[in-house]
View 1 (cartoon, helix red, strand yellow):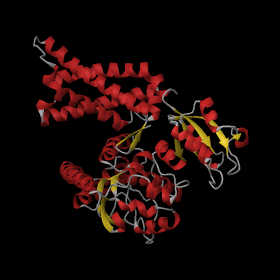
View 2 (view 1 turned 180 degrees about the vertical axis):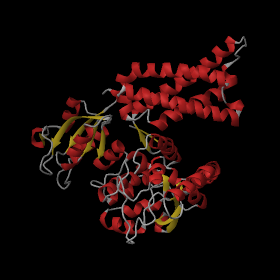
View 3 (view 1 turned 90 degrees about the horizontal axis):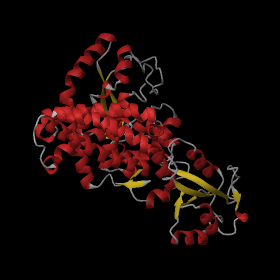
View 4 (view 1 turned 135 degrees about the horizontal axis):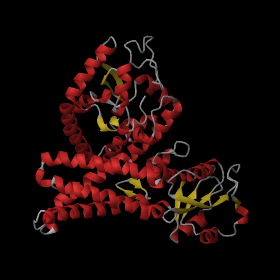
Length: 462
């Protein structure tokens, strides 16, 4: 894993992104040269069209990130990855076409773009054929030696078995800190030298996965390993890096206090985030106003009651505000007065409501909430006060998710399907804590781009 702007990116993904970007610049230039030579015009120096080449490459790669071309399942399966790649290039060309009308001088000509698009399809697929086994193989994976064989170590073993993991477990030592759950673990008394075991297994990282640390941490051996260049990682840091979430089963208050992060309240980042929210919410409200109006009429025709509904939610620092959405449920959805979790196939959802939830049109009026400043585009989803009170009693650190503004989309929304239970809330909280801890404009950009994947394939809609 490589840490970029406080966010962890898998090294194979970073390598593939760089190669793809270079290919996109190459095909943009090739498309320009081919078309101009075809009509008898001297293409000139490449330095005269750097902005146009960058616009093409950035637009296509933004589409690739957005639709999930770099996700594990797309990198493991050529067919799946190729399908996503074709969608990404199509979306990128649509974006370039829009930019052509807004700022013609910043993009390739439309005829150039067609040539470049065809070349991009061919060469990007070729890259995946040539590098597919290389980037998805074991060469980039970290070789892990686990210290511990209990519940926490078993958790690491289970993660290793998932598709697209970035590490290999080359050994496991039972430190007698808990009943062993890893069958292949060797007893600590059989290890004469931890340094020799690391060298023999060619491990480049030791992960401390102990259930009980008292009298079980080999401090001197770990210090010697650390000073000789072997990475020594605590289980909480390891799980944060490999899963993109803060693991509630292993995290300690001291780790949260002394680890880096939690900088979302810094003045500059707050100004940047608010400026982006104002600009984009105003623009999207203007563009989507006809869609909201038509949908509101359909909602009124489909079922009795108002087209819009307001609901109290909990925002930053625990303050409450009203959220505005298009109504997707019957007016008597909570006739008893008690807050009820939305469920899969919820019978309270109307016919029109089911459609607008699927394509997320019901969320569009929230742009007004963003414009007012109660919400941001990116952040933890705001919950109702009734649910928050219960979740704060049952889940540790739940209140910490309220240290940032809630958002329309978020790290939990693009990584975890829609949830309506205590266990779902716990899993989403782990992603929300990761976002709160590692916030940066870069992470916001990634979330906004990847929200496209959720919208296109209706992931998590209920």
